[in-house]
Amino acid sequence: MANTESPRPSRSSRPSGLALFDLDHTLLPVDRDVLWAQQLVELGVVDASWHTIRNDYFYEQYKQGCLNMDEFLAFQLGPLAQHPVEQLHAWREDFLATKILPQIRPQARALVEQHRARGDLMALVTATNDFVTQPIANAFGIEHLIATQVERDREGRYTGRHFGLPSFQEGKVTRVRQWLATLDCDLDAFETSFFYSDSRNDLPLLARVTHPVAVNPDPTLRAHAQEQGWPILELFAQQPGAT
Image (tube, rainbow, N blue to C red; front, side, top):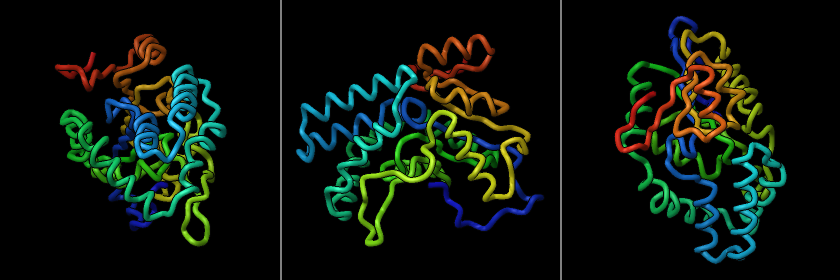
């Protein structure tokens, strides 16, 4: 969930710029949900055939812009309720080291650092759950994370359910506004606001920033970006650049 522990900046010291980043196929050239599912299959903690079929089913829904988020989250988070927290965290640490860190490319880090150098307020804004994305945000040095929130019981065990509004489609707009409200500011208060995304599912938030950027976009987002005159960034091309 969004980090709200740091002191609120005074109005005079607030950044004039905001930079929001999607994760899968934006800062990462892969789909983290798919890789985590593969990790569970490799560990033998889920049935390989059934889990792969279901994961592919939901991924196709996502690409078509019609993902049933509640159904998907019940599938994705269910395994978390079946294992001790310590074991889950060990699997997550291995997942980060073996499947995620090798996929973080210099050009993705450079994009984040460009906004850090500008002094922009930055957040990773992803529909993926915070169990797996918090370490990835840390790896990029992005302080604030807006992700789908995973529920834990009073003993700290994961319940296999989410809570609150998933940060998906229009939900990303709501969650960003809720986070900014904890800092006593609003999306419209920034002189410049950037959002980088690859997906048609992020059109609601892309439409609300001053600088929407389509990164490695899917066909629907690419066509929309071209129609609107938004920049298109092929971040993981051999020679990355904007068109």
